[in-house]
Length: 389
Image (cartoon, rainbow, N blue to C red; front, top):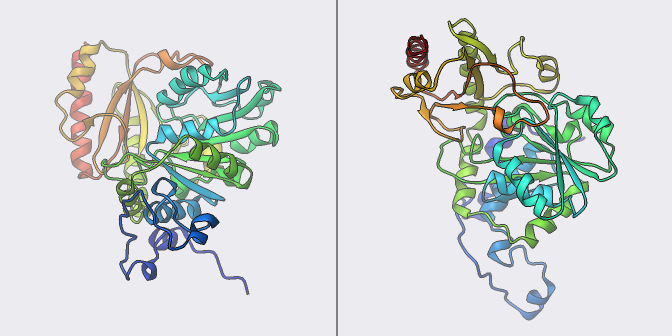
């Protein structure tokens, strides 16, 4: 009789832990080290010892990667020093000089910078496409198109990409890389929809405490070999301390994601009713343009969304944000604390120009008292409207 697969919460609690191998300690300890000793010449020459050199992995990194790999349903997971490094390794694993990558126009700014600068230096071209292309991606694919990069949803403007449709049109000759940081594998599994490689800024939801820099790459059987070769060839390595902290954060991911989801949706619905708010960009809202794809492919939503206020000068933005105490102003997201960030999509959009009037703000909804968060945001909106007059 086939043993039933463990559920997500069980994976989060137990995967990647081996107390029997670590003197009974519940968590895999932090193993810092470079040199690994071999007992015999035969062992040295065989090259099959589980750990051979610190850069090639430690029990700490192995345990953290195993848990993520089981959640994503991959053939292997590697840890990187940041989310951007995970994106870079993934793209370099499937692109060569003369190739082209198609990138969603809603991609994270550092991803665009890497493509526009570093990939260009390697003779690899980048074309950006409408995030809502879906099956229309077929019109963009050329013989030199070897990869498609997705970020679903985009972490500023929150468009959803239809991975299944893109996979059907792209064929198996094109590697699909998907950034799954927002939803995590608890709410979305790109590999099951046709992606080949999934990346995360583990700095965010996996870690959950704003104190880690780490990235992850999970690949299917077809792509894990090239990813491993690229990773090793570039000397990529993740700090065991960061791997430990991310693994610790994973144990509470399910509880945190559920709470983040409830709070973010409630605040998004509240914002829809507020004076001066033109639009709320949250794919979990029925009015979102991509809600049908979201409802089909996702089982939940994240902590992050954006909203657009009526046009006003910069002084109104400052009046709204500067007095805030609970919503901190800063980059990243995924921690216990709430964040707010003003942004302007216009300078980075090329395939689909951003034409919506107004000022954009991104919110990460943390774990402060919800009434206090709402009160502070309401006061900020009031200041914005007063300064806009």
